[in-house]
Length: 206
Length: 206
DNA sequence: GGATGAAATTTCAGACTCTGCAACATTTCA
DNA sequence: TGAAATGTTGCAGAGTCTGAAATTTCATCC
Image 1: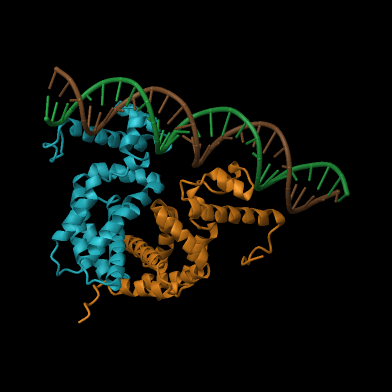
Image 2: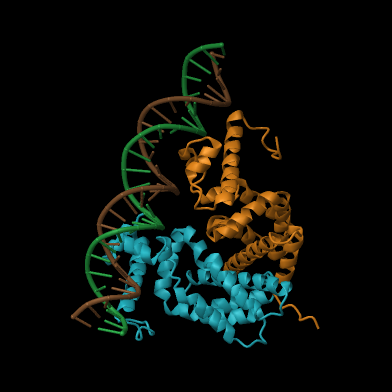
């Protein structure tokens, strides 16, 4: 019906699963946007999709997780894309490219993401979970970045720092994007430029 | 009895409160270190301190919060210290100073923090909550940083980025510190140097 | 087409988290 | 010393999340 592109090879079974998952996410997001996090129970969400609340928990470990919009694949794809970046590039430059790419994907779902960010704004506890993407995901990304660097402890240490800073910069860009109608890619590019220059203070308009 | 220094002006009532709070934190930390987050109930923690579990919730909104080691004052102090940094310094340099200071405080409580970090390692969900310190705290810090910069949207934007990156760098340093026995201040200084230089890849040992 | 096995869903019971409220105990202070 | 504040407790109750068993749905092979 809509976007999805890799649905074709799946049987009815898996298609329904994806559909249910998506429906739960959508319901969770809209309901929470309307009534607030505390104003919506898992029961409500399940009800809206017409499944049992137990089923909800088969898809998401918690109410919050249904709101995060972190698909199981997203992370793996990020790492794949990183692997395709030429090895000559610095770690920071490589992450910049990959996250610019990511920015475009987010931009394509602008409405959905704005709704999500609005929900986050009202429930800051969620914000934390989102971008750090779970220590897990970040750790795997760090490993991938470390693979691009000379081996040894200093390489790992650098990978940890660069990755963490890059993700943070991305997060800052997304938050800014949610308040102004500028293409996300541009904002991401901008924050990365700042970081690459060592974050100097802006010059006072002379 | 122990450390605290500003306890003297308080009445018995408030002293007891602080004591209870500290005892709850201590109990939570040691119990969770022993049995894992899921293996400890609020009931257990309250029991260990000999108060009702209802009382536990009078002090902390959730089990997790008792583990974070974020005192109500810590944040305010951070901001105060920031205000005392000469205005000529760049935002990044100012944050560097303040966080170096913070590093020493953390170093003083090394044992406590190592225990805490061990708990975090085993329960990554906590990690997220900790350093970002809640969107709330970060927001206030951003405001304080913005106060150092020329007014206007670009100043705010810069403050958001610098603050987020600085906190992230600090976090990375703390995590590294938890795995090696090097003074935290040194590690913090190092990550800030990297950031100030734009995070270049380390040179391969020629 | 219908039987068979695998996987998803549901139902049910139960442990745990967290909140509001009213009674109770203690500290503070006039 | 007695009244006002403030902290603690027990209780009731809503909500989250998990495990296990029963049931339904789907893919497949004959």
